Length: 273
Image (cartoon, rainbow, N blue to C red):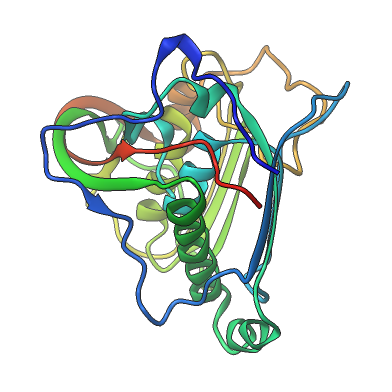
């Protein structure tokens, strides 16, 4: 089956940059999917956007997913830091089913979940390069960022002694705990506010940090596949900026700084299955 669709906004399937492009880099040792079926999604009432991907096997499935969402997932890059690309990357959705050889399952099961997840993302990057002819490169640009600093009165959290790392985030809430909890919080905040967040609190150590707020148009997180269809959050609560000061004694200060961005040099509608 050949998939073909006109580019939105009259754009072509390519984006160009003055910088020299570099193809998606995938280590030679990284496994690839043996088979991958890619189809244009057929809209249905009350449907969701979902990605299923375990770090323990070589199977990847996505339903009703835009190419922008796939690139964002594969490179772990927020959309605000992905530049270039045609309009149909956001407006055209796909269903994807990809499987690797059973030997890849054995490789993945021997890895930690973090290493397995990274390997799976590299496999999806290779799939994008092969079937969508994706070519990208990274640049560093001076962009608006946030500095995470202590608010007046100082941080409002105490040291805990438990081990391990916990990150739990979703619509209107973040919970983190780890060996450097504030840095972990900064990473999660960046996903919510759409800018790089640099930890400048000077606070290191293990803390149990919990933040709850009311999402708004200016700082609303993308829902995960497990959250879609959940009840709308209470709109009477504080914004993320107010909640950060009131609940944790921290604040986000707007600044400018160097930010790594992913530039899309070329991309096409997918090849035949």
